[in-house]
Length: 502
Image (cartoon, rainbow, N blue to C red; front, side):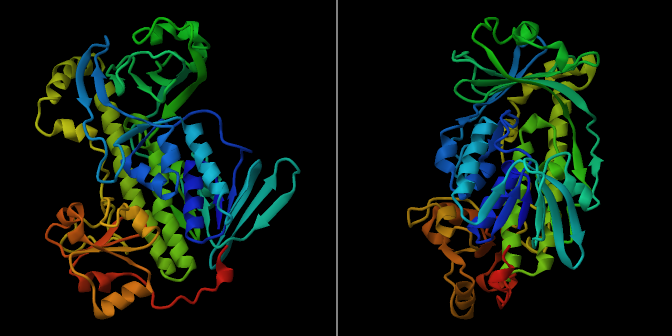
């Protein structure tokens, strides 16, 4: 395997592949972690994936829980506030987690280096990726220090190389605009030893003229984002003196502020029209770009990695047919599109409409907190169910569970479900399988969890007898035990040679 790009998406994919026994080469342009912070938030579903990588304890040490959302008028008067009251969700982790991306990447890189099946080559440039039909793809890269050119022919290539992806071009894919338009924003990251005393959630200024966002990213880290006007650029704000008028609503004493990043970003909503070709796949920003209003940019890439890595591993070891890899785009593209559209909708609701929009928000927003269900909906971190595919059986009764995540409760054993199951399939059932069903499940190392011993799972199953849960914790299908086991996609033989692992 070759992974192009060692950001959060690429490293997540490499770790998951190594944990599944797949040897992986990771290629990256940078010799070390990119030092500038970018993403600042991930949700409980992404935290759950990070925990599967074996880094939950370390991640806990660099995150702070997000307290909710405060919507402010153009004059910075609070119009509505949505406080988070749920500490941990059914996934087992906080709904919103603020962090510094270089710190997270350092943790992920350290975990990757612990795994002997992963090799990282930094300070290299991938010059070409060549899908070769029925043959293995080629990856050509050059060592930027020695200028030595290398060519490798892996079984699969995962392109996690960002918005300007080389791999995307190699598979003949292009980005399609989803209609948000390009918004230019000034992003300012500040470090200060002083407690600024602000409420611990996201502050969103709803202003068609100067929309802004503030959030605390860590003990000493803070981020502001300001919409730039047509006649402005980041160069107009070279230092704290120039930034002072923008920061004034939050703090006027800037003596102990240190700017660690000041950059102009263009917020876009785009989706690739093709996600794979002849064993070459794109993930993360190479496949989708989302405005940051719901904090799902990095998380979408990590979800891509979690969705694809176990499938690739199963194809290599012979437990899934190659055709199962078509489910990656079938599942992830609609999910990414839905999240991009939600982010675009939220962005427009907070910033669009000119003076009329500002006045309308001033009337409507204060009413939102009093509408039944709105408070929970604003803070709900649950993402849409995956679409139908060969590995998501949404044609049958019970489609409400198929494509969603199985809960991650503490089981009777004292371990959470994810720890108990590892990277294996899980059958959650009110009936213990017997006979041929039991033999087939044992043959494929499937973990059987008795839902009757765990009230959370018993309630979650509802009227269904059993659910078959994939290694990425997505429900494939529900029904009776016999029916669920019959629908399992396992092959009856594993004839792939160990030498095919690459």
